[in-house]
Image (tube, rainbow, N blue to C red; front, side, top):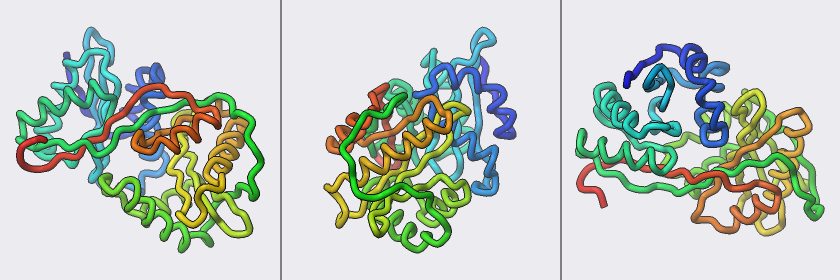
Length: 283
């Protein structure tokens, strides 16, 4: 097996796109990150870590990391490739905030990483990737979908801060960066019922697919169907634009949201684990 690093997202995508698109649902996050790196390079000042592993002249795994975020692993057709990635990442970083990926790949990485660094690994979130190709009929909900604009920025900063605290604190996300990036890409939508009551993002994964997320409704507007209506309307709008599939991550600790998305038409594809690294003995 041979590992190769890449200096630019463009070169990495050109090399790895066929492999990533073979398992588009499993790789929708990596594809989305690569799209942002190529088309909005100003969002990440530091150079990303981009590697592939090949065996018999075929890619068997890839990985990427955009500082200061966690390493993201692809599906590996040969798990031995994950050991090479862990060894190279150790030479490059010495320490990482964490790792995300499909369960076998993440577990294989953690085993090697713990030996190399002594860093412990704590499971931060168990997620499930869903895919949709057709929106199911749903009861009508008051309100309408609209694109978020710069005028919404103060409210979005407040909501994104609450969303990070409630749902993804372990990811080390920055509300201002997320909001400004979404407004720049025009990828964030609000459900408005006289006033904004919920939001959902739609981020390109490939030329034929979009990843939905994040999705958030403030506590005072919950249990009124707003998030369901927002995600369903955005998903339908994206399909109407010609995208063939929409992907969505759900938190398995939240059975309510998992049920809601399945009523819209999202179907489970695979599970995805996110781990944070720390010091001391793994528990």
